[in-house]
Length: 143
Image (cartoon, rainbow, N blue to C red; front, side, top):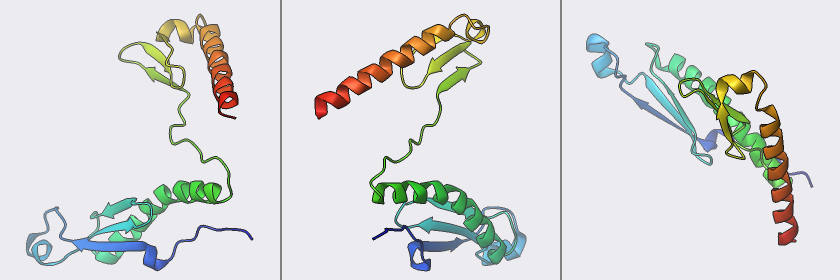
């Protein structure tokens, strides 16, 4: 039996409120801003850019769908017994202000300019290999 993750109308909560933008007398009376929340994930998106509620609802749903699709794919992987994707997809962080490069998994930090010149690439490769070996050893200990 194949399990699927579906969304239905009941999975969403739509809240309307008065826009914080200036709108004169009309803005004080009409709730044109929209916030849509996906109840199971807690993800939400809002829009108050347009003058009309139905347009804001469309924009909010578009924004929420961009957030919701990766979440739904991860949920489907969990149901199938697979490993969910990491949220943090960054391999390295290039900090231009501090002039450093940091490997997200190993924590290795090296000077930016010299790394871009190729001087520290072997350090990053060695750190990754050591990290992979340590993770493999941890998995073997658990089993």
